[in-house]
Structure formats: C-alpha cells, structure tokens
Length: 330
Image (cartoon, rainbow, N blue to C red; front, side, top):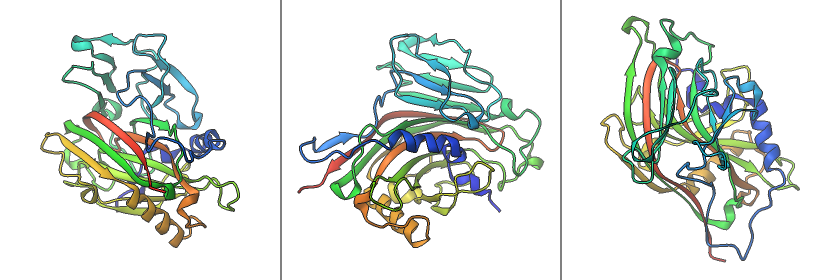
C-alpha cells in the first residue's frame, strides 16, 4: 500500500509550522472593491531576492537557519527554502556566481540555482541528491525523507466568491530522475520522487465557528511511479507531526499535466478556482470543514518542490511562475 504521506508536501508534515502560517495570516484583511482586477498572490516569482532557509528539523517551524541572499546583503527574501530531513544543510554554503548571471548554492545533498534573467537556467533549478542523502540504506516505513521546496504566504487575501479565476501558469522541465537504489530494495509503496504544489485554503471569516480551519489543495506534476500523477483525497496522516487536515489533490491531467519523463518543457496555464471550490465542498462533505460558503475561504499560502522518500537523484527547472487572483465582475 502506498504511504499516505507521499500525497503531500512537507509543509503538511509540521503542525508547528502550520500554526505559524495561520497565525501570520490571522490579521490579513480581504481586499475589497477598488482594488486592481488582477492581483498576484505571491511575490518575487523569479526568486531574485533569495530565500530564508529552514532548519533540517521541521519541528523548528519557521525559525531561520540562514539567509540565502544570493550574494547581496540588501536582498529581502519573500520565499522560504525548506530543507526538512536533509543530512546536508545549505546553512553554511557560500553563494557561487556562475556564467550568465547564475547564482548557485550546492553541497553533497542538493543544488539550488537561481538563473540569470537571460540564462538558459532561469528561473530556478531545485535538485535533490537522494543517493547521498540515503547512502546504502533504503528508507523504511515510518522514517522521514528529504524535502526541498519553496514556500510563501499569500501577499493578497481574496475570498473565493469575489474571484472569477485563480490563474496559475508555470513552465517545468525534468532535468533528471535517477534511482540510486538496488533493484531488490526498491518498493514503490515506500520509495518515490515527487514534485508538486500545495495551497493552504483557509477559512478567513472571524465570525465563522470554523475560523482558521483549512484544507490542502494539491497539484501534482511528477511522480516517478507513473506518467501523470492521479487524484488523491485523504486525511493527512503517516507521521507524528501530520496535521490531520484534508488533502485534496487533483488529477494532473485535469489541469493539463502531461508526462514530464520526456524531459520536454511542460507549460501550464489554467484556472484553479473551480478545483479549489470543489475541494471546499468535498472537505465539508467529509466532515473536515464545517462551512461551505466560498466567501469564507481564501488561498493563504503555497509551497512547491520535491519530496524524495527514496534514493533518487532528481532535478526540475522552473520558469515563469504566476498565481493571480482575477476579480469577478460586480
């Protein structure tokens, strides 16, 4: 049986971190009339301001081990770079400037490259070296696994019923995914390489008895075990620090995902709002949320990146990320 933990990012695996996310957003007021018709929900989509680096221990929540400022102390990062369960922290790794303006952090366990504006490596490469992380020991059931993902709170909070669309666009390319496990140790129920995105969709209404509650909305892009990852709906379980919240992951095909195993660019441009609203309804139906009114919910946070529950060396290149709220006509 496939480990339920495979269906979500590491952002789901830390109760403490999630509570910090919710607390940070508690005072955010919805944007009302008079605001622009289209607003970006997340800042610095080319990652030029660097990253706040997490500790390897997810129980430390949002504590920052180091600021990866891309060699410019004036940078103020909008993104967190989460490296949970790694053996090889980037905390003391220097920034190396490459050709074409590329900026690189690299060690035995991972590579993070922010490409220059005109570089063939733009905008971001995330690489995990699972062979180094696991060595000659295969992961066993119940054990943690390395993560490498970017994460940010929404800079604009828009109730779902005030929107015509949540327009999501992104270009992705799989650069490598190679197993470093002996064939006789590989168990597809325990070992995988996954690249995916999750939103926190949160109840933002102070007068709601369910205020602050949320579910995880997921878009899967890559899983080494299949050509296109399928839908997944379940309770977040599988670890001691799992949130217990509802996970609603759409079928990749429903949002235009095709197989990334070809190494070709995957270009996505899709309205996620209908899927997000369906997730609210499903969460209410299954008893995870109490209120089905879309006015009470908003996208409050997102994360994007790798989970590597097996000894895989895997890398993806990310370009032209945009997540925008498009206001409905009133």
